[in-house]
Length: 302
Image (cartoon, rainbow, N blue to C red):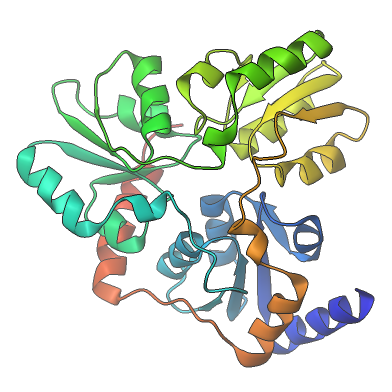
């Protein structure tokens, strides 16, 4: 592995590259990155660097977001097949049809979506700010929330506001079951339960805290508790243990493992920088419209 890491460092310097890794990546990929975090956070950090090249270790929509926020930079991915099933559950054609059915509705788009879908939306949101984004929309406006029905349901129930929820979901988070929480809670009664809002309603209802990946990290780090039951993709465990080494973490299920995230490897990172491919670019017209939806989200008070 050391030889591969040495090659990666050399190529990174030659190409003036910043390496980004999502919290769900393999441990060794996270450790090789300059920044580890959630998709939007990483894209914003990359835009602030003087790097010429962004190597984004995540899934395709994340690299698209980086390309939208840094149009002057070259954006590469280690594996072009690393897509997001949830993002694929909504298409521009389907969304346009739904907008025709509800012409006065505001489209709130989770960032886990393609650039083309973002471009058809009014405002984006993340798992951390979905509630605030929905709250910022006038109470008399109808809302279409895409593509994650679980995140949309969480925002809807939190605010007591009905929305039109798109029937999309994260297969990985839907493998996390309420019965597993009950089983682990019985075995570890002192542990606090923290889950991601992409989980189903019955899982969310059993949690002590519902949070994004960054929120889960903050909650576990800042809490006085010494033990946690964690409901999200298992890649987060690596960072949880690094940031809070004296605490114990119990992942709800080994099935919460996103195969698309794990397509990225150190070898593929080296190949990407050697070949300067696969490259991710967004049509300028689509990027401009998608950027508007992202900027509207960023303008919402936290």
